[in-house]
Structure formats: C-alpha cells, structure tokens
Length: 107
Image (tube, rainbow, N blue to C red; front, side, top):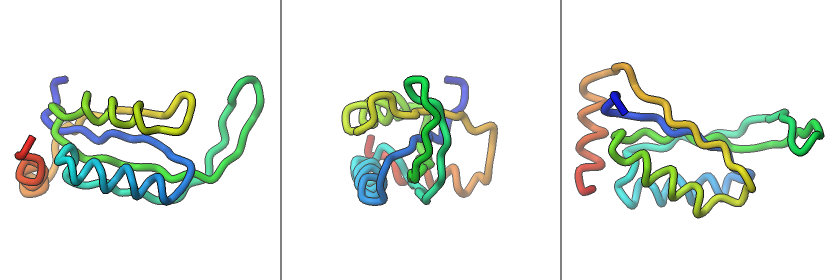
C-alpha cells in the first residue's frame, strides 16, 4: 500500500458490537482511534432488498496494521460477508498523523 495511513471502514449490527471492536482495536494498538455512529442501510442481499439499522466504524491506523485489522474483523464479525474497506490517506494534519504513529508504536 502506498499510503502510510489508512481508514478501515466496516459496519456492524449493534452499538455493543461497535464498542467491542473499537475498544479491542485500540487496546491492541492496531488503531489509534475508532469513530462509530448509527446509520440506516438499504442493500441487496440474496436477491432481496433489505433495510437495517447499523453502526459504521471508521478505524484510523498506520497502513502496516491494515492486514491485521482486516483479519480481526473477519474473525470476530457476525455477518456472513462483512463490509471491510481499506482507504489510504492522501495527506492530513501532520500533528494528527504523528499522533496515530505515537498511539500505535507498540506494534
């Protein structure tokens, strides 16, 4: 991956699950920060249009941790096919990016 930092995005079905993933990823020093908030989703699943209330997680981390984050989500997720998107940062506040480095340096 060419970018030094990533935002990994996933959705989960409950606030409890969002809190568990967020706190675990930060405690494991895989992510410096995880934002999560409720969303409404409409999607096609197995030929049917579905609607659901979900929580989206925005996970900020060094790109070197992205594979471990993806594997954590795959292992823990309750969905058959969870959304997992890894988006590279093009830039940002130097102070914020330095903070990401500092908070994940134990990896």
